[in-house]
Length: 157
Image (cartoon, rainbow, N blue to C red):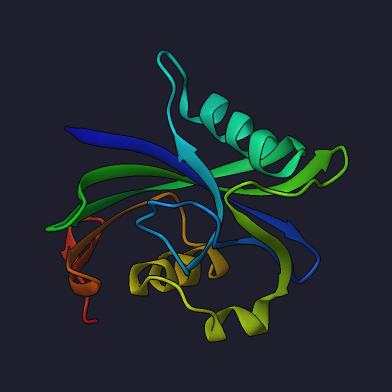
């Protein structure tokens, strides 16, 4: 079965809201820093899923965003996942604690020091370079990224 998810990076100036996954008992992202997102509910569009997940995990209601790309994950441990990737720069409300981990605003320059998936570094770089809408395929063996393709072309990793 293929998983469908969203991931959103909320940007405020030079900082990004990141989630340090530390609270779930069973979590393929345990100990990693990721953006905000999660699994689709029946009938949701990518935008509806992203907005709901951001609201549930942060308490913030996104009102300005860009749909930036699709990431295909293939993993020998976790199967296949299609992740819709967003950047948000506008929201309302007050940030709350997250039951999946610790939320923290991280300066863009510090992001590279965080414990995150190698593929996340690739798509963050594409986001920061304002790459037009893209399709990125990431193939993992265990926690090791073995191959990557950007818009169908193999990347050197």
